[in-house]
Amino acid sequence: MLGFLLRLLPFWVREPLLIAVGSVLGVRIMYLAIRDHDKVAAGLGVVFLVFTAIRVHMVLRALRARRRNPSPATHADGAAVDAAPQTQIQTQAPAQAQPQPQAQTGAGPGPGPAAPEKEPNVWGQAIAAVAVVGALAAALWLAPRVLPSDNSTARQPAACPAGEHKELPKAYQATPRAATGDELCKALNRPDLAQLLGTPGESATTASGTNNTAPLTDEKVALPEAEVSFDTYTVHLAATYNELSIAQYVKLMKFGNEKDVKQLPVLGRPAVLSSDHTMAIRIGPGSGGPVEQGPLARTLSIALDQADRGGYYEVTVWRTSGVLPDDSVLLGIAEKVLPTIPQRAAR
Image (cartoon, rainbow, N blue to C red; front, side):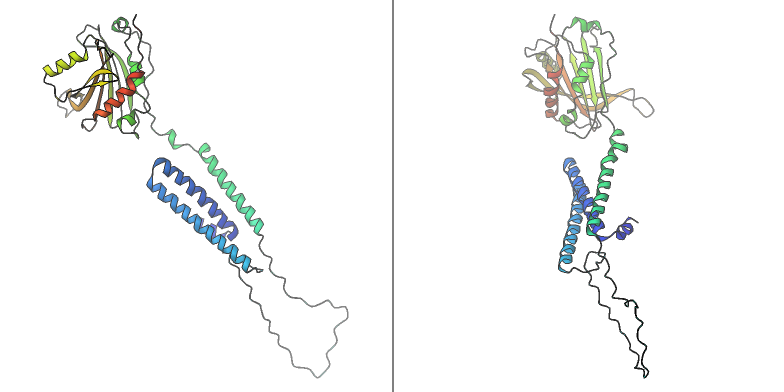
């Protein structure tokens, strides 16, 4: 239907209109393709630009033909058409013997040759084409502001819940430099966290922080925790404010025959990498029990200070697929997140 309507338009209206629409769409699609690295969109943009180039070539050829062959009539497709001279064949009656009566005096002149057909107004067609293109451009400009955007329905990244200002356990008051779960959540839930994990296209699905205390310590050791989950990865951050140093922690790992243990400095502090399975809690039929073995996780434990006087941060990362994450992922997260955790001065 649209193609039929376009064919009804005069050549000097239809072709500028197609050129304008094709160039605008082609440039816009190519811009989006380069920004989003979309090869399919880039191919579509090339098609629009090639289509526009062909229409420009047709208009230029029609203009050259018009200058070479100006004629009273012009075909709808732009090519000049020479009006074929019409030869009128007049048949003369045989001469009469009797004299013909003379023409009456004062009679008007006979009909002359037909007036040539008026050539279409090229300037008028050009102005009409510009007006149509302007209307389309205005519609394209106003459409995003009037129509609902797809971004409004897109899933937004999860945010850390607003703190309810609950009273902290006594362990946090006894530890002047202890951070809270809300502070750990805000430090961990960075805009570039997905990029640090190697999945820049993902958005956080959940983010949380809790003000826990270490088990078996009679609530005397602060243990704030935060967790941010993606479709592919889950990142857990914890801070344990106890007397255990990283050096002592490594000895305990060796005593327990821990495997895949690696010592290294991080941010100028002693640190150790280790692996262990997470715990999955399943409720419902078909589960082997309330607590099952979850995917394998990689943990980076870093001392709270360079002197390793006790206490440590833990950055734990695991994949939904169960494949062990790369160590560079944990190092990148620790180097970005730990400096942003608030450190309270000792009283």
